Each structure stands twice: as C-alpha cells, then as structure tokens.
Image (cartoon, rainbow, N blue to C red; front, side, top):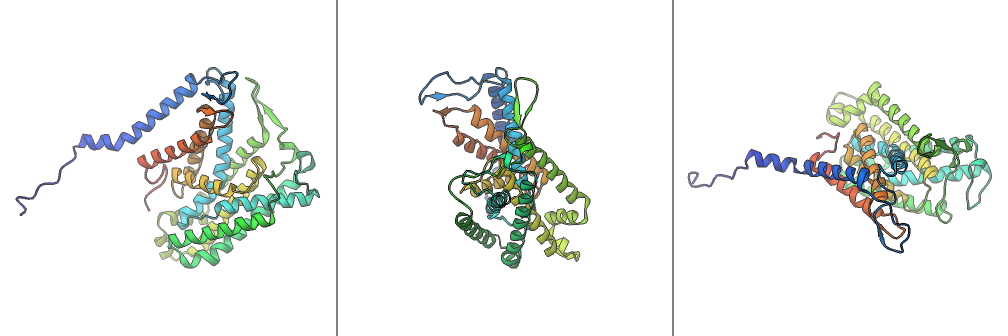
Length: 378
C-alpha cells in the first residue's frame, strides 16, 4: 500500500517565496504609487462644477506644499488622539485578552461627564455651549480630572463584578461588555444628550482662535490640535516609563508574554489585572475629554472610537505600546490623505474611500504580519 501511495506534491522553494512575499510586494507597490500620486500627479478640482467627479481637494505636494503640510499635521494630530484612546485598549487587550467592547462607551461617557461639569462650573447651561473666553484653565482641567477618575472607577467596577469570574471565556466576556456598552449608551442618551453634537470648550490660551504661524507657505495651525499631540507624547512617555521602569509595569509585560508563569511565581495577577483595567479605562475617559474638546461629542461616536481602537491595536499588535503608536500613525495618514486626495463627488468628502483603504491597510498588515506589526504569538 505504501509503495503505491502517491507522494504529496512538493511546492518548489522559489514558488513558496513568491507566495510568501507577494502581499509585501503588492503593499510596497501600492505605497509607491500613492506617494507618487500625492507628491507629483494629483490635480486640484476645477473652479466650477455641479455634482461632477473631481480628483482632489488640493493639488499635489509639489504644486501645493502648504496644503500637503497641513494634511500631514492633521494626520499626526489625529493619530495622537487615536493613540490616547487605543493605548488603553491595547493595555487591557494585551494583558487580559479581554476585547472590551465598552471601550467606546467609556470614551463617550467621559466626554459627556466633563461637558456637564464644565457647564456647571462656568454657570452656563446654554444649548449652544460655551466659548473659550468663558472658560478658564481650571474649568477645563477639573472636569478632565473628575471625568477620567469616574471612568477609571466605572471600568474597575465592571472588571471586578462582571469579568473577573469568567476569565479566559472570551465570547462570554465580549457579550458582557457589549451589553454594558448598550446600557451605557442608553444612559448617556437619557441623562446627557440635549440635542445634536456638543463641544467641550478649551480654555482661551489654547482655544480654536489661537493659532501657530509656521512662518513659511502661509501655514497657520490650531494650537488646540498641537496640544493634543503634546499630550499624546506625554502619555506615551509616561506609559513607557511605567511599563519598563517599574515593577508593576514589568509584571504587566511579563503577563502579556506568559500569564500562567507570572501566576505560578506567586504574583497576585488579579491585582495586576485590576490596575491594568483601571488605567485602560482612565485613558478611554481621558481620550473622551480630549476628543470632545477637539472634535465634539455626539450619539454614535462611541461605536466609531471602538472601531478605531480595534483597527489600531490589530495593526500595531496586541499588547504593544509602540505598535499602538505606529498603528495610529498608519491609520491616521491613510484616513486623512484618502479624504483629501482621492476622488469625491459634489461637495462630499470621500469618507467611504477612507474606510475602504483603512481596511485594505489592515488586510495587508495581517497578510504580512498575522499578529500585527509589533505583535508576537501568545
């Protein structure tokens, strides 16, 4: 029988290498084409036109360098906000293997708590909201700190009451957090939402009217968005120091690699889990206040930011802080440049192309690195 059995076909080594590196080659080709298009080929839209297809909002980087540089700044500052929110998600996901589907609700709830507190402190409850000249630094910082603390406590309570007893049961935990996110969304709608979108007002010294003149090409940029970038850098450095220079951080990193071994060494893993969830939820609430100040708050924003965090973490790699930063940058550049330089119809910004290319980026990364750019098998 063995003599007549057909041998399994062998794939030639050269063909195997071609198949293995094909996604990488296709991705590199696509990146090269996009760079050439943005830098040299893109043309500005015609002066007039009703409902006709137009190529871009701005011309190529060579023809319109100021608009190109402004889009780069928009991408970097958007990536900063993405990193603030996604870093908390990757901390929980990486250590506890919990896909916290309530992360977006934490973001939105933190923003609305800060909004309500700010209006209470200033003494203005107008539907139209507050302006920067009505808000002092304390009227922005205090709501930020209180909202962040509230969301941290809510996250800790959720982890202790609903997630601790079913550890390792991924589907059950995902369903529990989905249920909590739905309940939170209903409570936000009942107690916080008063009409359409609302903004948390920045204090006057970083308000929307304060702009930085770069001194070339007529580029003037908002200080509030640059402030978001500086805050994200500070949070990234603080998290890096915590994870690499403290005992708790080292235990967390060890738990990402081998949770069972950490527990076998006699370390109180449940306490570490509680700290990680506390910090992760606090970052979601903190991001909600920053996002509410920069882009506003509205119903449905929680789902958008949950999806953003998922994509960033999957691209960067589970449990990797550097991966969250790189994933946020890649996501933001694809989103912002696609919205500006890809075709659109009429006056609508082509967000549909941004979404398509974002998931194309995700597919390419997973084809080349199944665990994400900085992820490792667990």
